[in-house]
Image 1 (cartoon, one colour):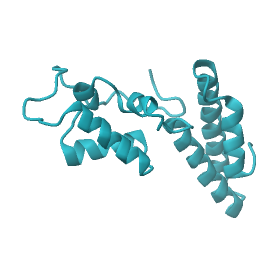
Image 2 (cartoon, rainbow, N blue to C red):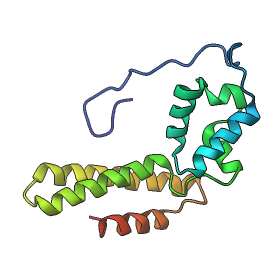
Image 3 (tube, rainbow, N blue to C red):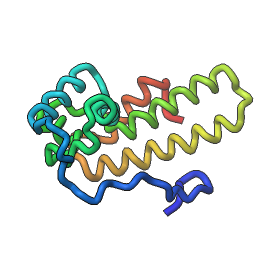
Length: 153
C-alpha cells in the first residue's frame, strides 16, 4: 500500500523484536511503568512522547512487553487519554499552520493545494473515528478545527 498523497511506497519500518517478553536486564515492574505513564500524561505529554521518554530514559523498548497493554489503553483505563486522537491532532495542527501561512501569502497556490490535501485527510480520519469510536464524533472534530483555523475550507 502506497502513500495517499505522494508517490512514495513507504515500505521502510523498524522491526519489532521476535521475543515478546521483556529483557532479563529490565528490573522495572509493570506497576511502576503504569505510574510513570500516568505521571507523564498528567504533565500533558502525548502517548508517542511518553513512549519516546520511556525508551530513551528508562530503557523500556516496548511498553506492551512489560505491562501487557499499549500506552493509549493504559491512559484510557486511568481516564487520561487525549480527547482528540493524536494523528488527527497533528493533522489539524498542520492545517492550521498552512492556513496561517496562506493568510500572509495569498498567492501561494501550492500551499493552497496542500491545504486541500491535508483537510481531505482530516475529513477521512474524522469519518473513520466517527464510525469506530463513540467518544470522538465528527462534529467535535470540526468544531475544534474551526476554533483553531477560523473555518473549514
